[in-house]
Length: 295
Image (tube, rainbow, N blue to C red; front, side):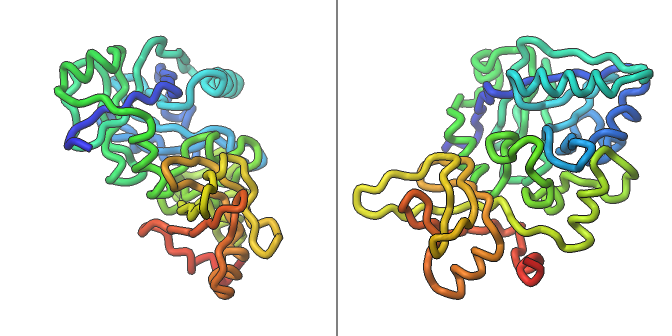
């Protein structure tokens, strides 16, 4: 891969939040500290159900007097928009969908974009930068001198780092933030005060209730074996050990039971998915021993 590439994320969209109450409005809803958001500095955050289960994740970044939400697109964007409107109540905010905006990942140096917003991916330095712009990917590539690459190139960096990608990896209304790296990857601010769904999130952390983790895995196919598809059950000793989520080029993300990981390690035997051996490849930022004794 060249030093500077742009990767269009065509399944993403942008919601704008303006008005004098925009910070306070979002602060009471999302898992991270919206007061830290400013031009060029973003936070990764989640919107939970009142019961504390995952609903949406996104990046929040300032663009002048507006906060832009880099979120999943399509039906997911519309659902997030409806949810924000539901909780708007008397808040003096203006919600909008930035029609036609491009969302891109930039690997290498920060691209110089004159129309839009560029910010470092707050989850991990190896994820580079993100670009939100009303210009097309082709125009941006031409103006910045970057090569355009495919979504597979993005996943080839994201998946080994163990970073979830919205509802591809986290089931809405079921997933728990701390099973998916939000604590270690700075997706939750524990000092900001209350936010919707905070009680379950805090209880999970302080009582050591994490039983599963979303982890990078390597697939070790046998002769003629095909890689498992997302949604394939992971087994150990013929018992449920988890489920495959994202997959690309011999690696994937899987939500795995910590107890099964420990048993497989003690037995010296691999877990399997669709008859294919599955080997955990935990990223450097994650210390599984923090959860192991509590699983």
